[in-house]
Length: 245
Image 1 (cartoon, rainbow, N blue to C red):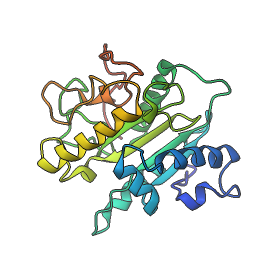
Image 2: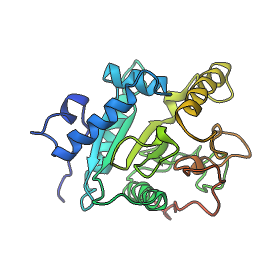
Image 3: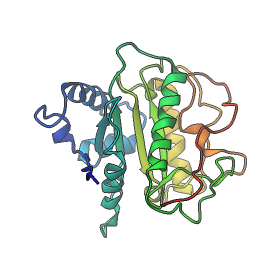
Image 4: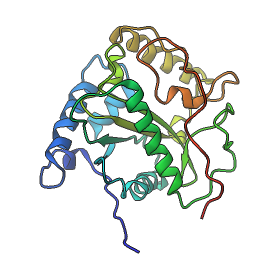
């Protein structure tokens, strides 16, 4: 069986056209410019980008094969004694013509489903398998992960538009230790970020945004919010596979 190598990249590699395609360097520059704007709402993302703590990867429309090994390589960073709040941003080859929010949302969920279908590890025992449970969270390699989508189709929620690519963010649940929505520090941090988000965006906070563990909240609904203030209806597109290898 062919071994698919990881494509976990640093910021230096993302700007090297000897390593990545030209579209990747262009979209990374769009991302970097936006995230390092002094007024960008997310302090954590801005700080991590400036410090070189973020990691990146990319996929074309016809080749996702390295994704499982890339995500595993990213998660291995958290095995070091000192916890660094790394985040991973996955850039998807831009469309020839910009698509709709629903198109990018469906693409986002196809990528998460692909990862799940190729996961060689057991689902975490503490995470429910049903997305309609308030404690459900996307997981890979036995690690609960918060995933979120950004796309060029966002016109009002400007914080979710990071360039011409669909960009998926991955943050292991463990990096939020001490910043949970129920903790004092977490509440203060989130409120400050959300105040800044509302100054950037042309809409108030999306009604599906809440904190993990809220009995009335479904985590999957805030993975890819709308460019509006409408509650997300319907069932989660994610399907838990019957059994793992």
